[in-house]
Length: 487
Ligand SMILES: Cc1cc2nc3c(=O)[nH]c(=O)nc-3n(C[C@H](O)[C@H](O)[C@H](O)COP(=O)(O)O)c2cc1C
Image (cartoon, rainbow, N blue to C red; front, side, top):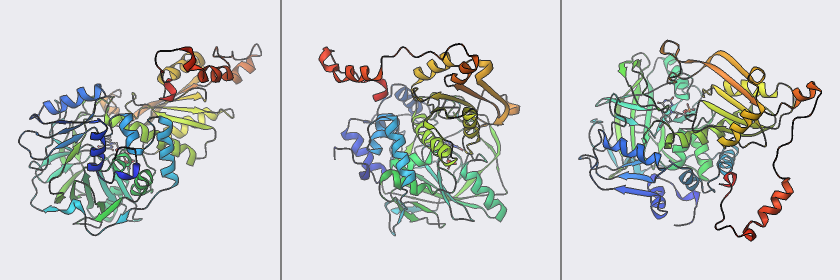
């Protein structure tokens, strides 16, 4: 298998095989200490935009750990079978939203080869690192799928919500109220019943992608993963509940999340912001009832932290596609492209490119971006369609040459945020000032000024550029550099 074929990756193993063939996978056979060395290697490898990693000998554990399969745009593109261009990614997501494919139920599944109900999360097959020097404990769930069900509608959610090992049979779970797991938990609480939870680890790339992306509420993430894969995701009924779990996962952990009891203390953990989060008191937790796994499973995780990382790469693209979908479903006209910026920790800053149509259009976009129910983009920059929102140089050029702060910057003093934003003082965490920057050309303002029109740019005429590009090889350049926007 050497050509890109998105239908071939039905599990983590087939994707690993492909990455190995493509020179995108590196196996570390030397013994690695999980208390400091493993996380440090991951940080350095993400900074070098290096290959996906398989750690074959973590302390004395038998189970290998996989990190970073979707850590670069190149590998993201390989998973989707598209060229490594942001436009192609967004188009693949668009196709998946328009053509969801329902999962297929199977009776027997690789993830059920081994079953245990005597639970010890500290033992094999869980080689779980202390990812960052100041983490409170080993974090089991970092790049995985937490599966829950809406008890009223049957809507299945698949999300990545981190899980610290608290005790040998108890896992923490960071449940933010506006996230979909939070919506489900609230309904189970109203019923007065503990919420069944299944945690699947070692996933095909499509489930990993939907888990970290803000797929709209009530939309089944399995269907969107199927849409991305171009075929149904195979699911099997869990052992202790009726939750559908990925049949081809490496490991599945099943349990119950109480609705009237909380764990006294959880975290801190090294967060996606690049800073340590704070200790969390009275936090949600899961009592583990059963573990099923393949005979010789792979464990999968990722190193959270500042960009660049697998977390920011995957969340940036998935959230950009989800924000685009949100603006389109809201009926906002003129949207050309959206980027939830990777350097903004794939959450805090959204850039929207538009064809400006009416006075107040940009303000409408500010409102809809701030109002996206599961995101927390406190900064919104709106640019004209001649600016590529994925290109930080172009965005800053627009901000520098089209913005007057007293006219084009809106500030809302109290808006929604995430408790992990360290720019907010601890007593106000969860609240944030919101900032919208209108970096579109101030054409109307120039008209009202009645002096001269907004100046044209210095760029060559489009047809001149086309002609020069067509002749590029004839000019004798040593190599054919690729233009930034064509990457
Ligand atoms: C490595 C990683 C860890 C994450 N941990 C959490 C978490 O603990 N809690 C949370 O609410 N979101 C977390 N996220 C972000 C969510 O996965 C993301 O917002 C997703 O869209 C949530 O699913 P939902 O939209 O179905 O609620 C994490 C993302 C990544 C990549």
